[in-house]
Length: 83
Figure 1 (spheres, rainbow, N blue to C red):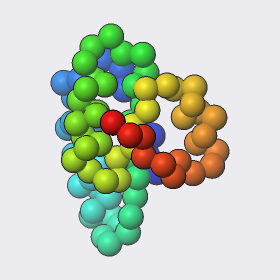
Figure 2 (cartoon, rainbow, N blue to C red; figure 1 turned 60 degrees about the horizontal axis):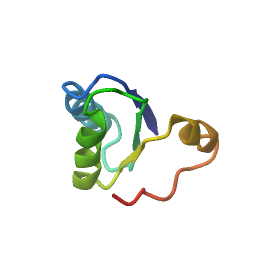
Figure 3 (tube, rainbow, N blue to C red; figure 1 turned 180 degrees about the vertical axis):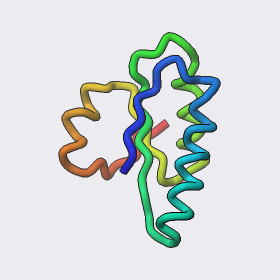
Figure 4 (cartoon, rainbow, N blue to C red; figure 1 turned 60 degrees about the vertical axis):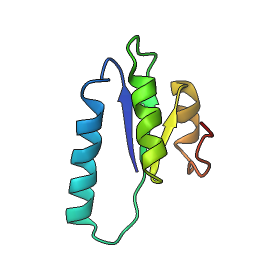
């Protein structure tokens, strides 16, 4: 699982996610993986961008509350937030 804090990254987060997906496909062909994108109180529109990414990809999870993810990362995040 990759956890990515998103702050002032509305113009770059899509590229970052695509790079992670490419790396995972090359290294773990056929294996499942999760990407957790956390809006780190960003003042830009990164929340809307990551919402769009989560709608397109079933293995991308998003959260708008960094404290929640920090507490839950010790276990497994199993429920994808409803948009």
